[in-house]
Structures are given as structure tokens and as C-alpha cells.
Length: 207
Image (cartoon, rainbow, N blue to C red; front, top):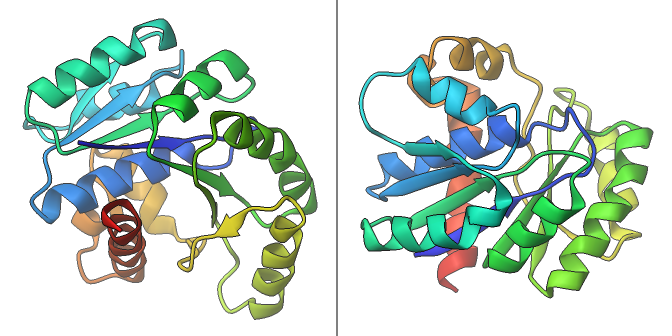
């Protein structure tokens, strides 16, 4: 079982959206997926409550139970675990980082967001795990913004995922009805970029 932690010490970066979209993308490729929701707001678990069926498996828990939950997920046949974390919670973030094979750090393109990833970068370094920034909610057709964001991320010594997530209404609309963009608009651009991001992540995990 591979484990991915989705971290950001800043709120509003899209951690839950990223976790759920990657979970469904992985499931569509035949993976058995568990989402472990460490955020006290339990947004991932709330999304699952509005969704029929069993996939993906989502459970809300305190970070002190993370190792046990990961072991249970593995014993239950999960091949991928995604850990959705809360902002402003270094204890939970560090526990998730230490448990992960790979860390994803979603970040919006605004200067305040880019400056704020320093704390999360330090947590990744403390855990000694490979970490990648996923640029999220990027303005469409704003190539200079994307280039500037990549340059800003590099100052923290972090790699940037090759697939950026654009600002698209499908992401938000889908979550409100217990779906993800690839289910809500299977032929849409949001579905396409989510699939591309998952394919990249999978290649990193199995390398």
C-alpha cells in the first residue's frame, strides 16, 4: 500500500478537493483507496456521507490513531491511502508526513500562499520524505502567473508537480453533490487534468 499525505499549514489551499479527486481517479484505475481525514472539520467524511456506494473508503479520525488506521486499511486490501490534513496543526501534519511515501502540498498562486508554504516545506524536510507542490486554482491561460509561481516555489527547495490544477467551477459543483469533477463532467477539462495528475502521482509512487 502506498501512502500520500496532503499537507498545507495554510487554510483554503484545496487539500480536501485534491485528496478526493485523486482518490476517485485512483479508484477509476482499479486501485482500492482509503481516505483518512485528520481535519476536525471532517470535510472529506462529510462528502462521503452525501455519496452512495462504498468507494472510496473515507474515515475521520484524530492523528493519534493514524498508524492504526493505516494498518487497518492495508489489512483491508487498500492499495492507496490518502491522508487529508488540517491547516494550522503541526502535530497532525508531521504525523501524516512521517507516515507517507510522498507528500503533496497544494498551493494557490497568490503571493501570500506562496510565502506560506515555507512552514509546510520544513515539515516535509523534518519527515525526510519527497514532497511536491501542486499549484492549485490557477487562472486559465495565465502562463506568466504559472511561471512566477514555479519560481517562487523553487526558493523553498521544493519540486513542483508537472500538472497544475486550473480554477474550474466543476470542482466545487461536483463536491456539493457527492461527486468529483471526473464523475460530474467526465469529458471536461477538470476531469482531464485530474487524470493527468493522478497518472503522474502513480508514476512517482511506483518508481
